Image 1 (cartoon, rainbow, N blue to C red):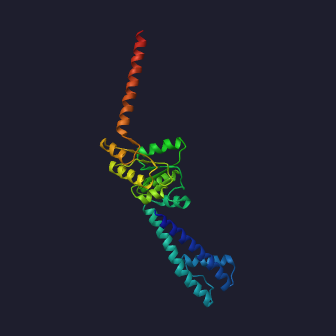
Image 2: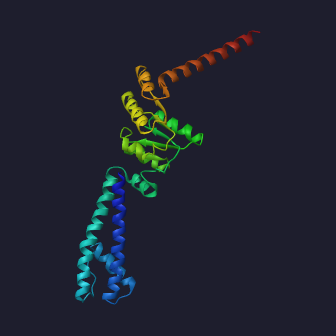
Image 3: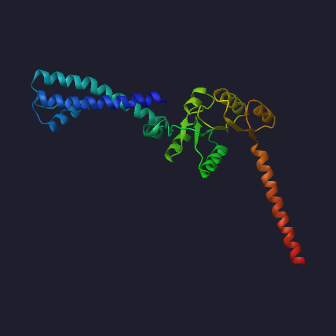
Length: 255
């Protein structure tokens, strides 16, 4: 959810609070009732549950009309905003944004930006967390972001291919960026953009195709990993180690 929407939501809440306090105080002066009754009158009118009995003065009736006009508009705006967030499956993002930025984004410095939270991106985050390294995830999928917010991960919802999103992620003050996007072409474009925004950034990326490795190196990536190749080597080495161990056990038994 964009920062502007969150600011508008908070501003709407602020205006509603001002309206309630002003109405309460005005009723106490105009109608000569205590503050509790004044608050009751104000809430009753704003929520359109009816107009309180006993308002006889002209100023009191004018106040009722003002509260109805402005209060109804603010309540409708806030209700529609919250309903929209729930319908879009981003209610948690809204709560996360109110707590500390969109979404769970701190003002990072000397951190690593992880672009894309797929299987590889998740593993990278786990390793950095174990090493107590500062990092920030950039992910455009709202459902994934919602889940990450709920577990307290530092996350910014947005398209990593958008330079404005990378700027918001603090790329100017970051120490590194890791591209784990699904498509090789996207990772190539991402590394190019990151290099332009911060030439001193340490860059790494994954590649699905061997032909993309050289291109990623040429645009600035210091490290390029082919997950299939790495996984294949680890699997083969593990297999050979087991086979070697079994052979040694067999020789030992023969002796």
